[in-house]
Image (cartoon, rainbow, N blue to C red; front, side):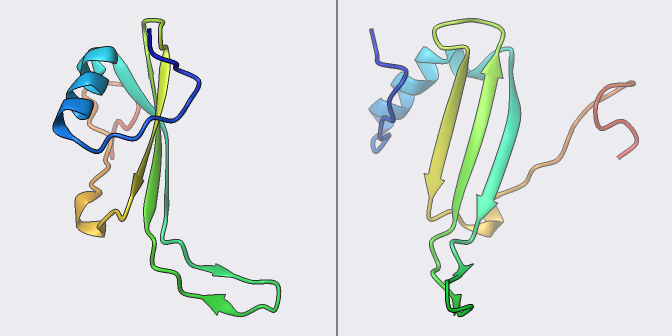
Length: 97
């Protein structure tokens, strides 16, 4: 069994396939939280540090256990790849957007 309490690097297609299989291809899952950062910051001397290391953290939950949640961390994310919008029909979350 895989250690779900540790970070695992996904750097190949087979590792990505294994992750998808363990999380059942995100079936019955929701994106609970998502945070994007360009990596830039203001240091102690109030100087803007333009460190271009964009990254994205995403927390998914699902209606099963082992694991019930998974957090993904993507590095060097391009802005053109991020397209997040609620897609709900009826009276659910995001209705009227």
